[in-house]
Image 1 (cartoon, rainbow, N blue to C red):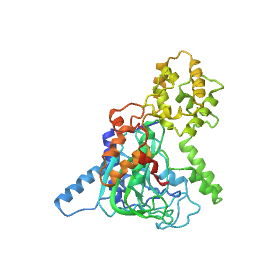
Image 2 (cartoon, rainbow, N blue to C red):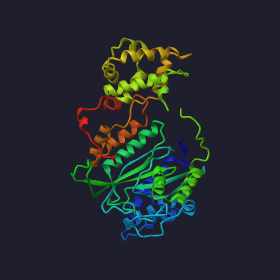
Image 3 (cartoon, rainbow, N blue to C red):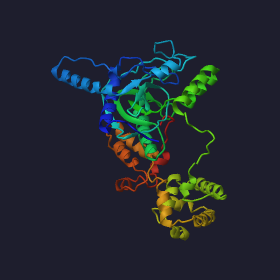
Image 4 (cartoon, helix red, strand yellow):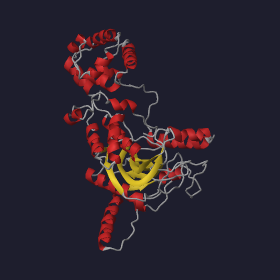
Length: 433
């Protein structure tokens, strides 16, 4: 469930943007985490501003200081986490093996070159966020409803867990993360949320396809927000090293903080019945779903658009087995010799829906089967433009992905629901993207 921020959206966005930009250059306090997730002990007062001599710079500094003081409306702290979970006694920030603790102290590393804002997620509600390594956890934000949210920087420099890495993120993967988190959120899936993304002109060297070809990329930092940044790996690392007492302590802490009312015996609901528009319980549904997935795999039919086009097409047109060109995903799967057999089973099952009509079915299905999802080729096109400091396509995709279930003229014109372009077949991305 998404949650209310507790204060005006415009104020939140302004503060998040300012916080992200400010932290990159003027943070002076340490930031702790094992599991590649350091934490800041303290409140919003951790922000300090340097003083400049010129009148113009001095005015700018005073303006920033005024904005910084508005962060006092936030409650940023990690005292509860630090009090209950052990931190690394070593305070120096260098790569080393860390045992018997959950957190380490580490400083974010500012960029050396100019920093520019790529995008801000203009969300009015908060959602969970997926975690990942090599990051700094700034602190825990407590809103006016008493809800806790953890603020994290990714790509903000080395930590004790960086191994041979430089602790940096690049625009290529960070831009994809921002678009993917937005897409998942508006699909109703609680994801990681990228509150904002900034890019610098710092050189970061990467081997994006792990083929020995090192390329120069632009360093970026994402400000992310989550209910918690603990992951399965947070528990696995303790189990791996046999630190079972600490494992139990951490597990008890996570359950107490984040899952106090979870009923582990509650069965999953998953989603395929809703995606196919069937109502009620029938024994043959598992076979119907498995049959369709088998046909999709054999024909390499597009997963998203097969379900979406089943949502939009009428039953009478389904019976004809003569799909217009804009039903391109259905045309592809219908080439399989067993598709008519599956279709007969599906239409028979739809007839068993009680108190239902074809228009009601299509309305129901289009509300759970998205027309627009973040695809690799779309992200690649947007990132390529962003590398040239043209952020327009990232911002356009942000807007499209905020309404994934609705038909959009601009999105249709841009081909967001069309078959992937031919060049996309050769597209390869690394695990970080």
